Image (cartoon, rainbow, N blue to C red):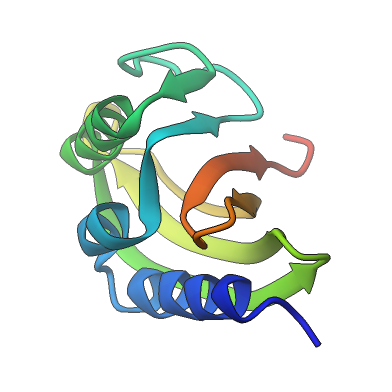
Length: 130
């Protein structure tokens, strides 16, 4: 059996992402000292690859939604591993508001939780760009 707190957090994050309630997920599921790591620098983003602390992750989300028109998103999962880790597969259809370029994206989010079930780290994995 998987850790009950892990299962609860993983299912809650999945539901929030599927219903475009990411801000609520940050408020309820993330530790204040959590870290978010992208696979690459986000061009034009407010920071490099890493955002440390809940306020920095909120700023990253705010930047993303301010600069991208999101047409659709999906979150598949969760996929659990051990007592403290899970992943989700995301698919997004977005248009960059600055360039007008519309792209379909797919990425894996890997999440680590603490003993209380709060997310303390998220890392995103992208497929190779062609």
